[in-house]
Length: 447
Image (tube, rainbow, N blue to C red; front, side):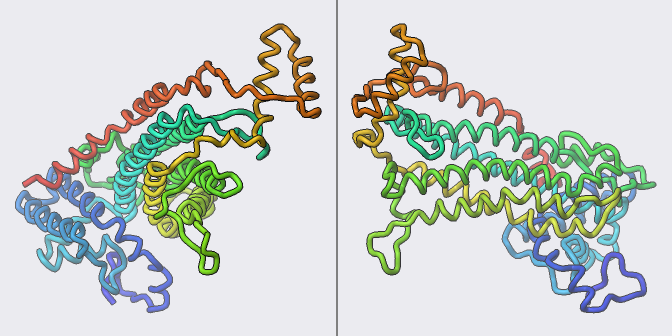
């Protein structure tokens, strides 16, 4: 069993070791390259306050870049008996460079080390999520424009209600993603603050230059109060989880619609053949498995904020090991949501719409409001018009006029997709990912 960073004279039993480490080694693989980046910024700052010489900094940065490349190639591993990614990186440096490798932890704790790792990881994940949300948004707007003149039934209480259109249906989910992107932007702004230098949550007697590491890592600002920096553990994950749950809610609802509209009882849309599966006994089946799995995965993601909250709930100020367990539910959720976004964009792009749905007489009654409105325009009081049309329907005397004209903003005839796109552009411009990207690129390429 390898020595721990905190080992003194007492060795832990194997059973206690297994219980306390848990899945940390597995989860820390998500954080490996971010741990290296945080260490590069930290030691650059240490050299500026004379805790490292320029030569020591140079050899440490060179070796950390080598470890980073190992992670990028998929060759990095946390060895058996090594507690976590922080221990593994320091072990690799010490093996290669000797005592100089032991100097990198001055002025920090694993508490602020994992905090900065998580924030760097989350920032990159939010960047990827924002790109995938925008991609799905663009597919939805494209389909909304393509099918804007194709009418479909609108429903309330799952009863045929009023005329809608595929332009409205696709566009509605596009605009929903705009609000989801707003949540994502809020999560980005909360995340993009530097906790490094807060150490165990109470700062350090070293004259650390926290603004320097903030700039080196491309953060907008820092978590200034060192106690609050530690209190942000769990809170950050919960806030980010809410933004993910918002996206997942949009996807789950859209997936349900698509599964329903694809069924023979509706037969409104046709899903791409490669996104459906057959039955082992019924040769006619084409099951919408991809959207069904999307619905289930996204419903699971919508529970994530509650799970994170229940783990961190009622903890007093300071660090507690409970927070380690959040990694297990939080870190893998990004890949699951990204997969769902990619699949949804693929299917929406290839989805085909049935254009003669309203030929079926079961939808005739949904034009009743159009007739009520026509009579009201001609001067009949609305309630009298409502009663007349209702009685005509009951008597079988109602003949629908399907030539409808909706002109107000956001209606069948005026989708406002250009306005929705402008809203998305405005939200997306708030991220300013280039600052983060330029900072990390500079850090990796300093010689």
